[in-house]
Amino acid sequence: MTSIYQQPPEKNHGSVELSIVVPVYNEREVLPICMQRLRQVLKPLQLHYELLFIDDGSDDGSAEWLLEQVVEQGRVRVVRLSRNFGKEAAMSAGLDLARGEAVLLFDADLQDPPELIPDMLEQWQKGADVVLMQRRSRAGDSALKRFTANLFYRIFQRLTAFEIPADVGDFRLMSRCAVDALKQLPERNRFMKGMFAWIGLPTVILRYDRAPRAAGATKWNYLELVQLALEGITSFSTRPLQLAIHLGLITALCGGSYGVWIVYKELVYGDPVQGYPSLIAIITFLGGVQLLTIGIIGEYVGKTYIESKQRPVYIIREISDLDTAASEIPLAE
Image 1 (cartoon, rainbow, N blue to C red):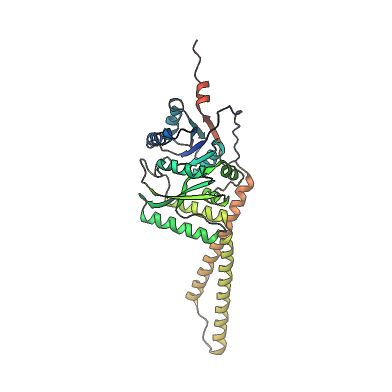
Image 2: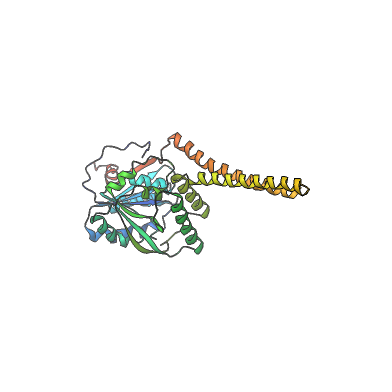
């Protein structure tokens, strides 16, 4: 992953068995609860872990609170991005910087219960490179959101050459092999769910019941979710372009057939040519088809344009861990 930030030489941190990557954007209200529950789950496991929080340009005090935890809690690393780049970029930064042999993606809102982490680790230790968590129920989500989510997964599976398991979000555990495979994907238009599925590797699916948010409010709205869905489809499939071609052929065939029918009626039956209303209806229909096709083509051209500029997916403002925090404490005279 590209970033203009140049990391200092790695110090000897020992072997990290588990990295938990937590993207954060204005989650100050829920962060103390999230930290407490993660600690409670991880303490009895007796493994060397790190909590890697990626602050995605928060402006509600989330970053400041996390920086305090670096000194007070230990095993906490905080990465601050220069601005809000979006969750996909924040997850990419976390995967790039995670040091664990296993890496777990976790949302700070606690809709995905951390108490399931031991079960995920057990499957990884048995040899799974990817452990997916599939939602059996989605408490707290509206009926419309559940319907549109299910619709997206079905459409995506029909348009792409590989399958994204339905009702699986970002809550997952990956081996170092899987993380290294993801880091080889250089695209700037990043739809992480598709990238996770694209790499393949041995996968285990566990089912669970998703809880409502522990605190705070969601940062997603329906317009952003629709845009994310379009991003996913156009990033992993050219089928919409093929459908646009088919639509154009069908429209041309229908228009040509209708024109032949009008000429036939005029020559055989002497019927007058239909006037203004039918003409406007046909022009409006054809104009809509043309605009739709141009829009689909434009989406792909826009992606090509963005990729050609080779801008970094994210820019790091600072990285704080116990080593950097200790170096900032003045020595006693």
